[in-house]
Image 1 (tube, helix red, strand yellow):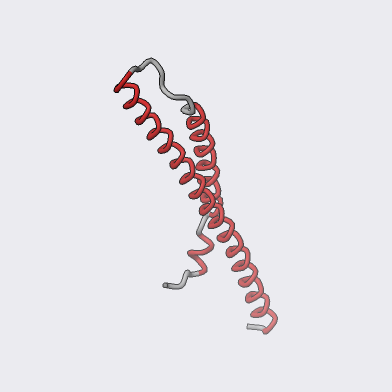
Image 2 (cartoon, rainbow, N blue to C red):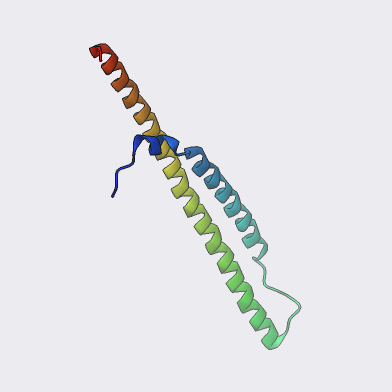
Length: 108
């Protein structure tokens, strides 16, 4: 794996990852509300049409639930990444400041 340069690390914008994570969490919440609205079986159908409608309804509910879980999982990863990038940037800035101070103290 190639090394990340100091410039590339400091150019990263961890807040962008955290913003996207928040958006995904909002999406997961909305999908949860949609899933909740799909909790009742479809009505107004009879016989084979009702069975088909219930089957499709169940598939839709499951797909919405899965999408919500995936959005929440992606949000967790982006949050972790954003926080790690923020911490790495802080360490890089401290290291650069320490190196600058050491160079100044040595008279170079």
